[in-house]
Image (cartoon, rainbow, N blue to C red; front, top):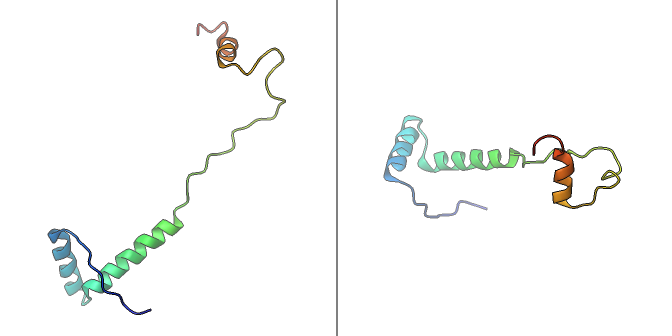
Length: 83
């Protein structure tokens, strides 16, 4: 597929700076924009998503006498600790 024309809105200051860089490097604005897009896309491809580490432990669940009740579990956990 060949080049496709499109319109992109950018600030005047950014456009002027990009034109200066392209001119100084004997390049074109198009080449500079394409290079920036390629780098940005490559960086996003390499970026790894957040992954929560495994934090489980061995055991057989709750201790005997503890029900899956948050208030009761909290009482037992903080018993004698001023909580």
